[in-house]
Length: 282
Image (cartoon, rainbow, N blue to C red; front, side, top):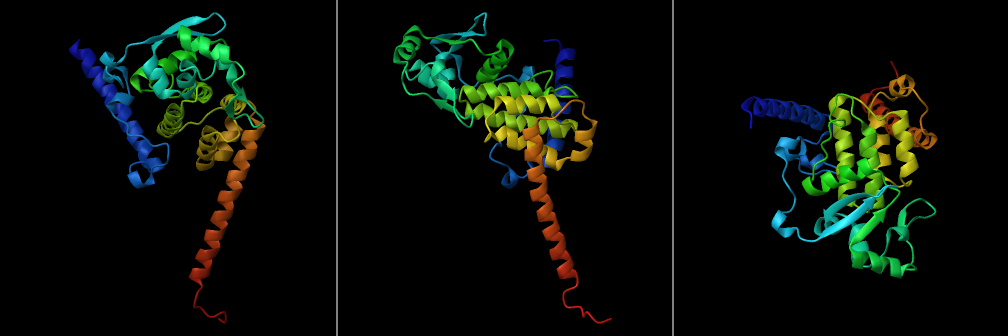
């Protein structure tokens, strides 16, 4: 490897790590006791390609599954062990549990499995060792495949000065459909860190994407709303071009009202303590 290239990569990695550490401090992540449920141990492997490591030794990867993605059926060939380890959807599909058509977004939009009415299709997929996902975006699935093998979410557009949050949100929606909970948690963490490191936030178009592709109880929705509540909300809402998703604005108002009520209660308690013991007669 060119020593100049290695030096540049090391400097770039150090700069990115410093930004992330500053973001950690802002969010309280430097203290393990303050870490939320989406915390994970970040290492050098999370930042850039020169640091790639694989989650499973290649000697343990044997069977390959064919996955046809998008209307033109772009072919991905991925290892069954990884797919079944990280996705409940693939685990069930490849063991004869259900087919992609068995996943349904019912009343509240939460992913659920339909009754096993398509057993023949389910067993056909388990026997042919192939899965067809005609409604998925090829680039988003490629991002998923990269994460599947490396456990990394590095992307040049996400790690830019103005992060492309929509890439993380698209991948989150895919992870929701594939029932990949570990990936969802990592994506929330990644979005929070990039927002803090760059002092930016998702755009109005991002909120539309988020609310149109996730269910009401989505943890990503809560994370994005909480992110706006911590920042200068009035400035963010007034300076961004485009219209915000109405459900996002409603959720934000609810959170701000709750936080405002807590602040007023604290102020009253402080005033009460300040004048405690003093005579009302002057």
